[in-house]
Image 1 (cartoon, rainbow, N blue to C red):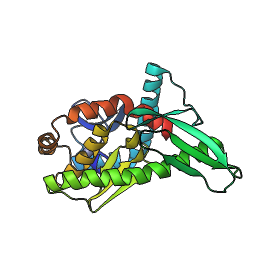
Image 2: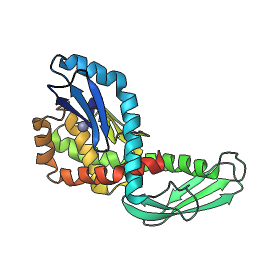
Image 3: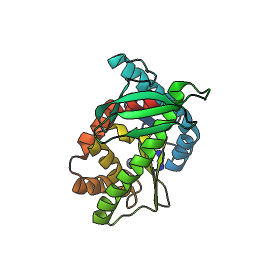
Image 4: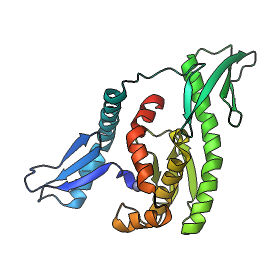
Length: 242
Ligand SMILES: [Zn+2]
């Protein structure tokens, strides 16, 4: 997830004539012929990255569709939201005020009160309110996790931001700013924890080298289970909420 190399694997090919990107549901493959050096290959990846990520989301969405054939449902009263990996109902009402209100009682449903005056579609209004609520909830949750793991690892981020991200779950920038996808609120807590640790470990290793994974393993021995969860269910979440 660092420097956008998450989902990208690099394959040297004796037979390839040109650098190319192959997009499969499992990820992006950068195929590099013998005469092309790493810097050139990275330049090519950088140039075509947005296209590749868009394609990847498309293909992963399609793969999910093939498996589960769940159409994207609008968010409305009675919708179920997989908050922290467990289905929580959404209840929508209206009120006379002009601001949308959203709250969630512990172990209770999400409750949304819509203003009567607004021309956005209800679905959009609910989505933006949900985003704001989740952002605030996640900020507290993630700071707790980052404090705990960051202290044990001796790796503390400069800042953590919760964002809408189209294709990634997290990233760690060169100045140790960590970005996390707000949809991690809809994964089991252990998955959110894994992504936080994943990004914290990038403060030390800015790659996915063996040293990097050794560090993750020492700290979170079950990380591959959480990673598998993301691979199996992440595409569906991105498609439903992005
Ligand atoms: Zn990473």
